[in-house]
Amino acid sequence: MSSAMSNNNNSTSYDSKYYSNNNVAYVDGYSLEERRRKYADVIANICEFMFFPWIDLGCGPGFLVQILRDMGREAYGCDFSEVAIKKLSDLKTRRFLKSADLRELPYTDSQFRSSSSFHVLEHIEEKYIEKVVMGIVRITKSRFYGIIPTVDGICERDNIIRKRIYEDVTHRTIKNRVWWADKFTKHGWVENVELEKKFDRKQYGWVFVFDAVQTGNISI
Image (cartoon, rainbow, N blue to C red):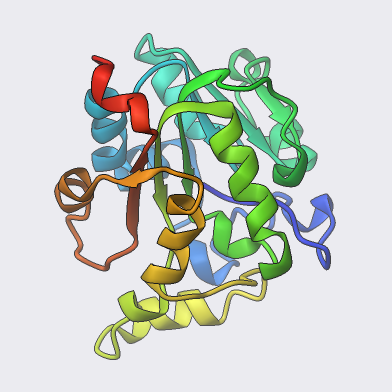
């Protein structure tokens, strides 16, 4: 939902100013209620189709974790920006968050039944993507749900979206959909096309859902 890590940005780059309407990506601001409104469909998708315990990788202030915890869901989060977690997170939610580099996730194998990463992986430099994906599939037992801006999903007709994606200086890796999908399927995960179509209401082609091989035998 926000920052992950970058070789050229330290954690203080993702501070209160980053999560404000001074950032081209957050022209409507960045608050609990703004996230609740903007991510209403995502929250519904997580509650209905994801497995718990669930973790938000790149959780920023932890607003999604807070919302899901308030709904009684076993949700966790981690983010590269310790500044974001300490300054912006709800106190009762903060104990479920960790400051962590996605290249070195401090969790055990299959610790979470599912994981998500929303507008995060594009912030990572290309040379680290493979290691990050390996970490995601290692700690995730069954399902990954992500939103990743793709070159082929940024339409010429939508200049506002193009501006937000390309003018955000923290964006390091903008690739096409096939490139991103390959990063997961090469590890034996299977793309869940049915859920992708259901989740991708804006039809940008940015929604990714991958299942581990055994997921089909697990009930939610």
